[in-house]
Image 1 (cartoon, rainbow, N blue to C red):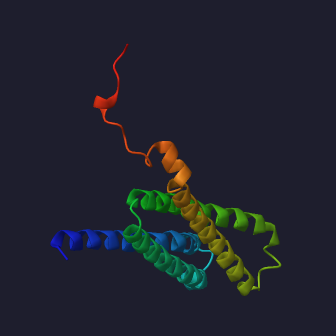
Image 2: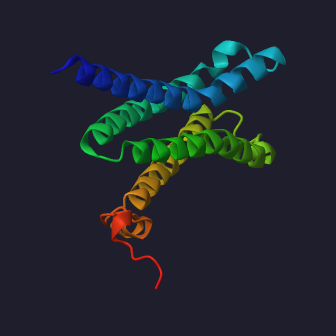
Length: 175
């Protein structure tokens, strides 16, 4: 194996690992923000948000490993590496939006249910994990859908990738 091939493989695997770490960070970020906001506002001690952080860390770590393996596999198996990363960026944006906005909407809607949920920490943890799982599932569906759309034979044919271009010398000039 040449040095150039090894260097390319190292770059691909490093980029996939960085993407997996970024996905982990996006999933864990809402728990960290909630923890710092609650502790800074004097609402709750910081150790009480560790359960939300643990749930987010487990889900984020799992999704980060899935992202790393998928990107590493797709970037070595397919000829359309840019399409792999375009799908990954779309999934990252969907994950970032859903993991924060969806949680904010759900927690806002639960504001009037605060009294019944006051002593039920497991319900809140299940809700938090479920919303994070939904965000991860939608991000994964976005990635797969964008990648399949970009590599579909119909789209490639419409873009002209399936045909050999005709050299300019074979065109007829005027009458």
